[in-house]
Length: 157
Image 1: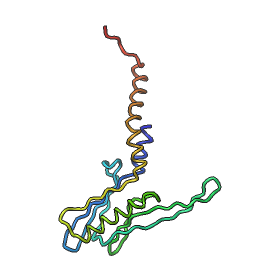
Image 2 (image 1 turned 135 degrees about the vertical axis):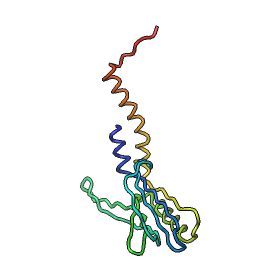
Image 3 (image 1 turned 135 degrees about the horizontal axis):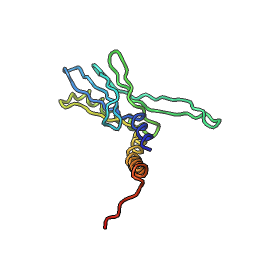
Image 4 (image 1 turned 60 degrees about the horizontal axis):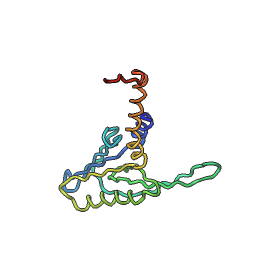
């Protein structure tokens, strides 16, 4: 169980986007992928952010002899020369993608002094991982206790 939740922590990372104005018309960002929102996995620099938009990704998947259509919404950061995608949201999370893109657009329009910080995660796997990880640790402790201590405790008189 500990191994499974550790894999979920890594497979479903949290994206943390931090943007700030370095000049009146230039916004630079740092995109960090973090396991459990804490452990850095990957860092990307985004120079001169211009816009953010939401794109729909439609994929066909064959399950049990049927073809199903999966729709994912993805926030895409746009610079003069590149597009950088953030985590994707499934169909039920489309409002989260639009909300994230709107926050970034508002930041670009208003030019605040404080940096923008946006967290984006696939919350269901992350929530399951956070719920089961402590349970897995307790089970591991109990198993090690039984293996090495024989599960026997001395009676105190």
